[in-house]
Image 1 (cartoon, rainbow, N blue to C red):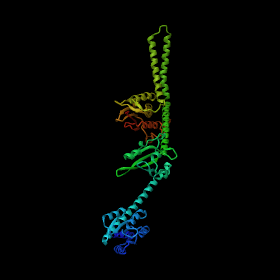
Image 2 (tube, rainbow, N blue to C red):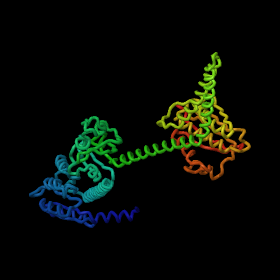
Image 3 (cartoon, rainbow, N blue to C red):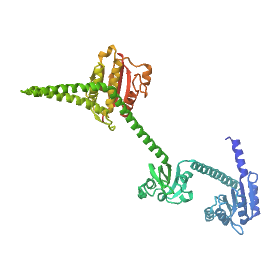
Image 4 (tube, helix red, strand yellow):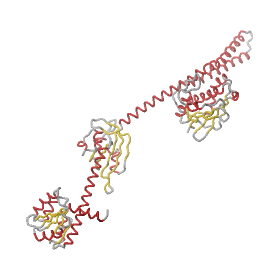
Length: 523
């Protein structure tokens, strides 16, 4: 603001400044009028204390120049009455008096006067002191206006907040609330103000066990001055039930001392209901995924059923033949114990062979609880290779297992990891069936790739993946097989994701495809 604008603003302010001149001596009033006239002030005159009180209440001047010694009500009493009245208590008062002893000035200042001018006075002094007091008055008015604006803004902010806001004093008595606090708690503002916050809203735990105030975060805030953030707690509603809240307690301090606190809280009842519903939905989804995983295993066994039947039939046929041999030996007059023992041992061997085949099938198709345990990775893959050898013989393709050295135990559900490995092995054999590269067989290997993961790779020399197949490989119900369901790789990807691992693929530089999956190392 330049000097011209400043002078204009000062003149405008001066036009609004009323000054009341109070003196029972007309000569003194005349001198004051001559001194202040023409300076842009609105000058008011009172010749007695009684008149001064009436004019002050009606006009509310910014400043009063007040004589002390007057008949009737003197200046001291006028000042006392003005300061006791809310309508006039903010008016600045300058005493004008011939009483210039210190005790007289002190008395006037104690009654609320802002300044003291001794008679006889100098015009320059009066003008300087008047201008000084009017500037102070203008600043006070501006500050008061700004404070009112801030209070109004704060009230609007508090009213618009969705969170409840409650202020308390050092004894936890409620001093202010916003609209949201009344809506959430069910208590009206009148019912809350002055009441003890703890006794009203935090008196008990959810099981109705009484809550000691000294155990609450609010107590620590009021006594130690440290802010507290509380999640998933409860407040008590006016209707007698508790509701879930997140809330914070922030201390109110004055001169380094905690004088109260502000509690900001949010009703999280709906959020908790949503979380519970989401958790239930996730549980149902996990159950459906486990069912689908089991269905996929059963589907795989269904596809391999003919091969397993042939595999089991071989030891059963051998057992039947050896049992006939034993029968013939026993019918002889001279039983050859060595021959009989050899035949019985072969029966036992074939029985174990059949039992192992059935045990592997049962272990694979059973539906255990999903359980992550510490597993020997190489042994797990070795068992899968044995399970896949049925298909390998049927397809005239060999499986070559290359176990890595110093492979640490992995954290896995062994049945599900077997399912992934078997699926990849069968897909690899399917990709190589009837090709010239069939004689090279399928290769599967394990290796430790970091301190966190072990990698299993299945390498084929098949026809590779088309761009469409590569893009939709893990999409449910997408398949390139005429009889496939299209859920195998999708299920495998879900299994590896649930293990914290990854299922992926890349082109084999020698032709074909390399599928791999990573499994976390057991910590």
